[in-house]
Length: 250
Image (cartoon, rainbow, N blue to C red; front, side, top):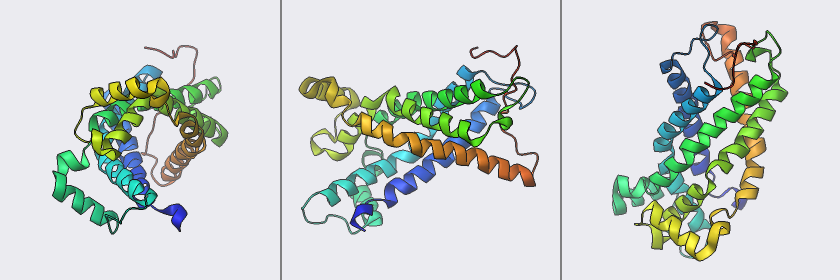
């Protein structure tokens, strides 16, 4: 069980993030005037929808990120256990630092990760899918292998977009020396003391781990949408008709 210490926080955070992310992505597309089968958005517009959705989701995700880091730090050290569990960690954090300074510590860094990250996440995924749609077909003609490929590519793109933001955010949440310092100051301090390698520390294994995980996220999302359409044909999603008149850019 020691291998799964600290799992509840990132698991709950991932569930909250993805549910809010896909819901927000769908709503932003509608706001931009998308009507499946009638008016399709360009790849750039879809990527921008993802960026907005990422910004919205960050406000739901950040408290889980803070608690996750604090639990991981406690479990990785030999110090006396500071928290008796996930709930106790949340309660103590709010009591000592308040909601904003406690649970939303590092929010700026998370926004700087989520906005460009999800621009690339959705942009790359939709680009891969669009490139595989047969002439005269739609996105619904694609097989699961395309969704897996698109998701894997999107996962790598997400973590490559602005990985230093995640490095800075982790330091602000975990390192007491950076707890009350702003994003720019921490960024510059890491850059000065460790260079660019310090800001990109861990990127390789993170991107490698993201590929299969994000492949499954998109594949499961598409299959779930297909499942719901069996019971309610009104459940719609972008179908991306492929024709010679459709462009990849606006």
